[in-house]
Amino acid sequence: MSTYFTIGEIANMYNLSIQTLRHYDKIGLLSPAYTNPKTGYRYYSIQQFVKIDFIKHGKALGMTLDEIKVLIKKDLDLFTLTDVLNKQKLQIKQKIIELQEIEQHINNLQARLSEVETFGLNKPFLKSEDSRHFIRYNYVSKNEIEVEINIRNVVLDMETKYGRHNSELVLEANYEILKSENRVQYDQMLIKLLDSTSSNTTLEAGTYATLFYDDHYGNNKIYYSQLEEFISKQRLTPLSDVYEFVIMPRIDQNGIEKSITQLQVLVKKS
Image 1: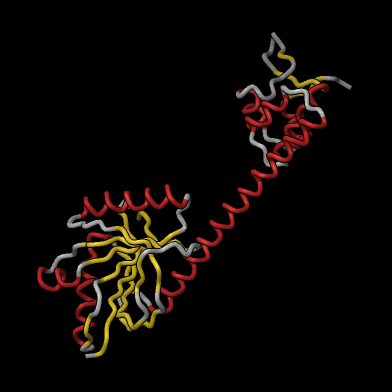
Image 2 (image 1 turned 90 degrees about the vertical axis):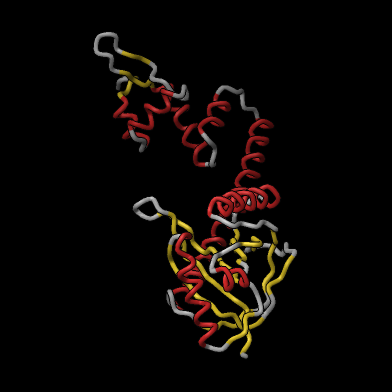
C-alpha cells in the first residue's frame, strides 16, 4: 500500500471536503507532505493521519482552527491537556449562556408576533396591560436624523452596560404636540431588557388604545392619526404620550427600512 494519498483520498477517508483541506493548507494548519515536481499534484503521508485526527478531535471539542494550530506546535503533557480542557469547558459554558439568551430573544419575538397575528394590523383596539418597567433615556428627537442618531446612542449605552441586545426599544412621542402641531416629536426613549429587572421608569397598568402596523418609520403619522381618530370616536381621554414599540425592524427588497410596530396610549373612558 502506498504511504502517500491524494487530496481526494484524504477527503473521502476523513469525510472532509477538498476545499476544507485546501483551506487548512492555506492557513498553515495542514500542508501536503509531498508535491510531485512534474505534475504539481500534492500528496499527504500516512504519518499525517495523527495530525488530521487531532484537528478533527479539536473541532469536535469546539476549538477554533487558530487554537488547534497553536496546540499542534506544543508538547502536550497531562497537565497541559487538563488546562486546555478546563479552559475549553469554560468557553463552552459561556457559549451556552449566549445561546440561551438568543433563544429567549427568539421566544420573546415569537410571542410579540403572535400577538400581532391575533389582533391584526391597522386595527385600533383597547388592550389591558400590567405595569411595565423600562430604562428611560431623555433624548428629544424632532426629525429622522435625530431619531436615528439617538437610537444608536441608546443601543450603544445599553450594550456597553448590559453586554447584550435582548431588548425592546420604545419611542415616547409627545401627544400634545401631535394634536396641536400635527407632527411627531419624541421626548424620550425607553429600553426594556427582556431578561432583566433593571429599570428606572414604569408604564402604569391600565387600558391602552393600541394599534399594530408594519411600515417605514417615515409613514408613522398615518398610524398615529388612525389611533388618534379611534380615541376620539370612542370618546376616550388620553392619559399619556404615545408609546411606539419597535418590535421587528428589517429591510425590504428595495433596501428600505420597515418595522412591525405597536402604538399605545393610556386612556380612560370620558
